[in-house]
Length: 324
Image 1 (cartoon, one colour):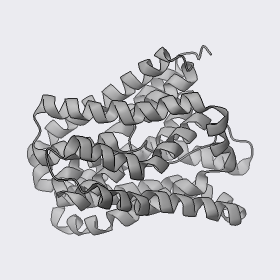
Image 2 (tube, rainbow, N blue to C red):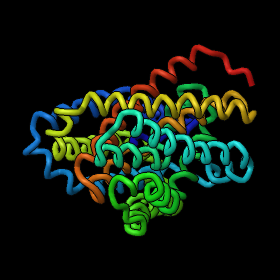
Image 3 (spheres, rainbow, N blue to C red):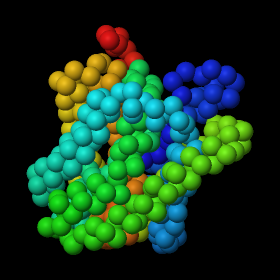
């Protein structure tokens, strides 16, 4: 979860500033999140109270995502339904099932198991748009996939979480759906409306939005890690291993599944990134709200790792020519 960017190529000074700002933000984002994680571990008493504001921070991030979206972003859905359908289906199929397998393989305790499943059932992370751009993927397609999976999340995420996590801890799917609606969908729609009725204001604000996302997710990680610091100190390496495997499965299967369905190289790169990079901030927030602080730990660590792995994958793809 984190930084939004929807511009394929800068066409004016404002777009260029937004483009540079987003790329810089994504580059330093893992370092900032890592610093927040360390600070939360070192100062748990001081940072744990911040967990009360995590959902508000997520609302600000999703409002920022809405500000970046335009009508052409949604027009892509009508023009290219097949690759979007493939991407969204892979998003909500591969990652939840991979979460179940990883939880079983690592024999996680119930709270951590629920946290991993929440990450798997979450919509795509907004940082995926920038990573797709850097990986020479299809940015317009990435934006459309993220938007569709996000708008579907109030229905799909609670249902999948109920299906896969209820055996570990009770899942209140209706309440979770309401929370996702409030945290995700309403802020995104509000951002869309502000962009429609105050376009000049939003254009001036666009270069700052990636940094607002960085600050928001850093705040969330700080509070979530502070609240669950003892558990991280005793089992953090195990959770990190789980996160790396889970994320890797999503990236690999997302790419090869898309190639098998003949969507083209750019779309396959984008699908891999969309599937592997999750809105882990949302997963962490839901874990803390509906379960225990420990259930937020996988989402908090995933927020750091998927940006690292995404950057590595983007660097790899940059060196490989696009064949389609």
